[in-house]
Length: 130
Image (cartoon, rainbow, N blue to C red; front, side, top):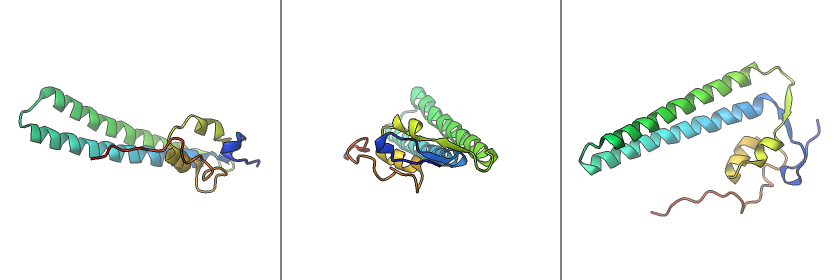
């Protein structure tokens, strides 16, 4: 199958099950981060001392977010398992719109051409300093 680097704009053919599996892993990781966010909200609520109904509602929203992300991850894993052997897809177009370089590398797969060619300066994740 033809392959070319993501940075050159050419097609990047991957076994169809692979990007589904990698997306499931990415979404499951986001669900874990949602769980961590719930713990942060709980600590902030405890520190505030007063039980704020709005804050509790938002905390429940974070829980729902985690549950929905876990559901999507399970859905994508099931699709990945159902893909016929030998089916391939060009993932280049889907990766073009990703803005975080690390996410591009994770979703491109370990052997994808261009997975390490992504411009390191574009889409880097910046965290708040504490």
